[in-house]
Length: 81
Image (cartoon, rainbow, N blue to C red; front, side, top):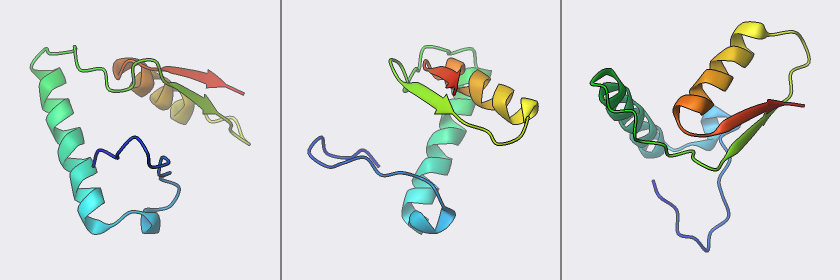
């Protein structure tokens, strides 16, 4: 699912925006990363040097913390706007 550098990024805003094959690729990659982390390998940082900006209409501590932790585990940062 790696995109060529000359293509703009695709955004995952709705499940219907993703093909069945792309969804399978995403799920397979996430399963592989989870197995690596459980085995003690924390060196895979695909979101290094990336920042996630989060905006929530309502206080959503559990969701915010989950996204924050996930970004940090994958090498990125999360900020609240």
